[in-house]
Length: 325
Image (cartoon, rainbow, N blue to C red; front, side, top):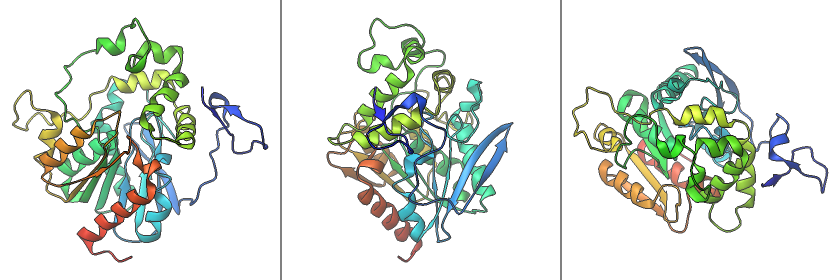
């Protein structure tokens, strides 16, 4: 188990992630405004930073962590642009509904639109990492009037063959081993949730000298729990609208990509162990857009290569809006 330092810990003292206090580490920048939106009885917490133009809507990713995964982007981007974030349902300061339907990707997409409304944002550049990249793709396709452009980083965006409907035996049934990706299993999560969190983020941050990033994400992963994650994991991800004509075996990401007209930047690490770079290549080809491959980067360059990511985001914004430094 990764041992993490509590914000108030004295020098030389440390605490286990499962016993951390509720408050968070000191931020480099605090929000200028925050609040909640409520949809179908679920409250979603949002934050707004800066007053520049255009607005970046930094989307949630997998429920395992909350919006602090953008902590290396917010201070820089908010000096030049306007930044809005929100905690995805199931983590952070947002509610943790206990029904699978509440975690359908459509719910996250509509949460994003509700946050745009609550923050008085007509249009934004939507950006997401991993599953958040899938949300960015879907928002650009389903709500083009709200999207100036979109950015994905290491996107899990439905460019593999669709998973069959119904329970996934590999997830629901006990496995003979808990080695490697066999840990991605409901029974393994119930036995040792934080053990899975630590293992998973060692795959996310496979680059050398990633101790700090792993420590952070273990803390954020302890802000949710195994039962919430099991409920969320059973929800469909990026299912296209039923009235879209499409081949039955077409990957869902391809269906969304055909409906995207805005500028789109695809970023992917060549050493990604969670979503292979081939997925980013296929996504960029489907969107007929630019792919930036980060050589040697793993699944989350937001944290491991923040300067490069921040400059890519800023250059993309200026390229489509003429925004000044």
